[in-house]
Length: 174
Image 1 (cartoon, rainbow, N blue to C red):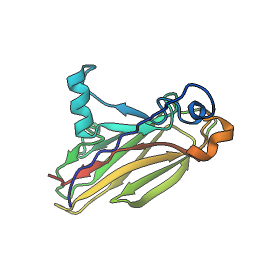
Image 2 (cartoon, rainbow, N blue to C red):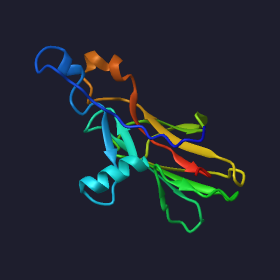
Image 3 (tube, one colour):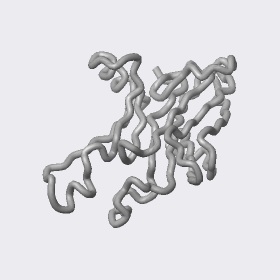
Image 4 (cartoon, helix red, strand yellow):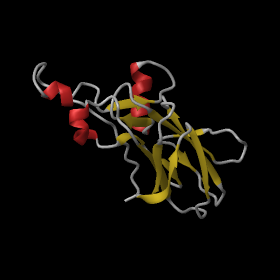
């Protein structure tokens, strides 16, 4: 329907003993908010704008996802923002913040909900390009998978290999 829906992670735990706090720790998953300043107003504005990425734990890697829509080599568009699509080539940059040396990750870019590109990486930064047709709506988001060492081994089934995801960068949305 053309809506711009932003995701966020939430955690909940009701007991301090037993198995529940081992699996469902407060902060698992963790929402990272990209706000202009550390004030309640700015944080709520950023949440509303979708300037959010989500990781499986507070100490886990997170994803910075940006776009350069005007070709000036500056990535001025961030997660949750909208690009006026005029048929131009858009360069995207993905950075795995908290990259663990020696780790291998699978980075998947989804365009309009389907896999656009996916590759295994062993470095923290990746870039890709796309050229959506002028006025054509599109959205791009990123998922990162790999080892989840901050999850207790006996509960790896809860997280699987999911590390982090982003909200979309939109093209030609109102």
